[in-house]
Image 1 (tube, rainbow, N blue to C red):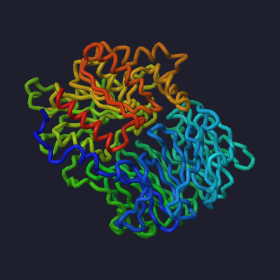
Image 2: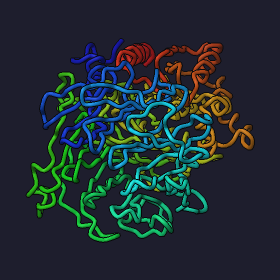
Image 3: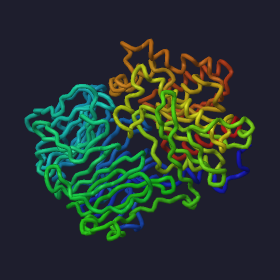
Image 4: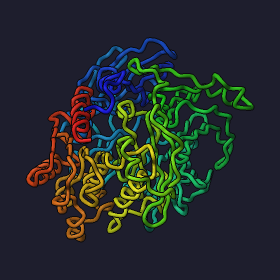
Length: 632
């Protein structure tokens, strides 16, 4: 039976709470953004805050990004086919004419930005070799094979943008999620300058050209445990600190090279602090007073023409994702936060599907002790009417079994990556679970980003299963909470989080009531053998190599220990998944079913690495909810 006889709002209502994000400001003051009103993200446009938005694209597949030309009322957007991640670039003109700029459906295309005059754009693509990304420059009105190959790459290359004089491109080469190199490519000569020779793992993220073109601004943990904001010389690679990271990462920046405006965000235990200022020297910033942002998490920061406006998205557990625009001059002239109450204005009004935002639940940030004495951060949410007191400290003794009889079931929701972080942004599915009487626990186990370099490497290679032990410690902590029923705890996760679900179900099987695995890894060997050619090297850098670590990878694969699984299991996957191929789902379902474990499988033919289309999400999670009602 359902936990509650009936929720006021059904699952479909929660899943149709909309999100507006990915904003780009156009040369005539218009705002383009993505919103999933039709069930998948499409391009919409506004000319002023709160106006009626105009839908610009009408596809069946989700749009992944949108970028306005700096000089014309035209934009470029990206779209793949059925989640296969072979992104194609399209131009959308002011009159609605749409042109496929790349038209090579077997290749991936990664956007690299417009030239400042709007006449060309750059991108990286694996057209020549599926495992290698080359760099291309293309005229705005050219298509397909008309792109000019300006650099033959090796491995995973990304274009980071054009220099202010449009003569050079900034390139990033990724060796792993925690190790990159930066290069400057002279477009005419093809000469590439390596700026970041280094030993060990060093991150170089969010690099932007300086207004004079002589340097770059970026965040790096070169010499620091957390990401710092630095200026780097564009010829020598010499670095100077602009803002140190302190205890927390500076995790993103945006620079307007016309005005010298710079914005950066700091990730404080998962919550965003946004800073805006003006460069007054190579390493000095005159910072403005910025009011507190709506919600808990902000991102997608971009400047408009002449730096007059700054657009960004905000999200929180009680605030669905929406685009806000800041008036830079108002912030510049304000002497205190109180002087600029109207400097940041909400432009989009993505629907909450009629659900009152005040019914949404805000999580509590908690920390629990794990097996080696470390403190693991997590977000813990309980239904509005279910808490019977304060959340207990991690050192509290276990409750009696009788106390659990009246407790709530808990969904332990584990993020993917592992190079990722669960943050308190909006989730309709989380709010639905809470409305149905589930508590939700979201840990950031070792290996998560956001807590410094050392923390991210605690699960590397042969230490992989230490992150699974952090999940077991989470169960120990949950058992101390009087609001929790320890006999009704569910493991749920996607991608790497799906591996964590399967590993937890096999490592400590008697502690779970059920598991939900979405696009998860069941067998590290077959995963690495079959993942996209362009990804294998990066994934081997994280998990271990097929040549050197095959025996270890087999030993930690959930499929190897499948005889230990006991809890009922629901498996979701997309047929077109290029990251974790669908065979991972087929393996675990077949083997678990053979030994009598209750298993349900749902494969979507038009999805890839995740379930993105609204109709599919409704079907998937309706089935999941029914499954949990039956078994939990």
